[in-house]
Length: 394
Image 1 (cartoon, one colour):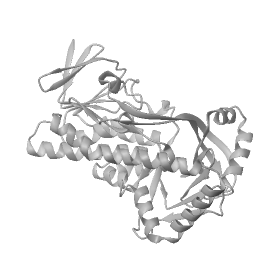
Image 2 (cartoon, one colour):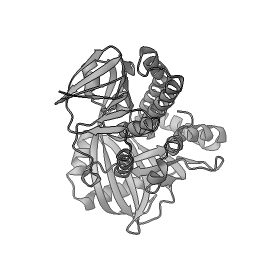
Image 3 (cartoon, one colour):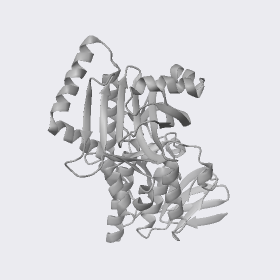
Image 4 (spheres, one colour):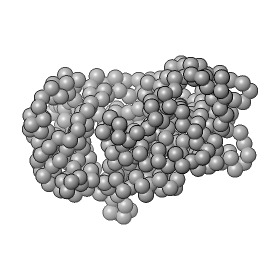
């Protein structure tokens, strides 16, 4: 059986795993990236969703010299409007005081394509595809993976293998999870008016509807909608023809970007959230969705995963500079201590905000109206919230 040695093994070659592999290879580490899917081909990406990139994440991507390529496909968010039910009750956000954007919207396929082109040029990165992990064992200070005809061993194993992480199941790491018993539909579309780099979030009784500005395509204005609703409603919506879906969506977006003219793509995903009880096991660290997932109401899930990556990057840099071994108990606990509370906090914020906006009665409606009015008039509160959206205070 062939044996492959490295400093760092990464399970999962999605957005988080690929960025992690690239960033840690830039520090001189020998990295093996193991992915269950076939070799990456951007022409075969089925995920047509977009990712909201915060200003904080952008700065890290600049640090590892990857933003310039991603930025070519990014549409900046210069303003955000939060709307409770209708246009008469809303909050406006911008970031003029910092002279920067609130975030950026990029298609997942462009992010992945950019990262994998970079990875293929890194001589200290080996990518193994069609991987099926058989078991995990230890030998001294090494963690060993057995898969197919290979033994892959390293000082540390990084699990970025998604919400249903097989690695987490192997170790039986406890989690707290919540099934919202809802779905979100993601629709990319062309529309009649310029979005003016403004993102919108409408709060309705059955869930939020976000409109995210995208790059123009074929000289047409383009945006993406993420709409949360009951499973029954989303399933019935998908069964309709596009012209009927467009009619329903046009009613909901209340003319904010004109009329939806053509649907480009649409897909759905179930709404669930979870939080690991800890972000590590022996010589194992959980990153991104394998550690935590959230209600998409704040659009910060991927950015918190990127906070994990940046934290790990800085920790590895520190240990390398001191000549210390990666992956021991102190290393793993330090990562956990730096990142667990941030995830716990975002889990609570997204869950509670969703609950507050779902309630629809006279008292709660008045309280929300008063709260939104207070925030709209308070520059300090608006600045704090916009900093959170930027990833400044995550």
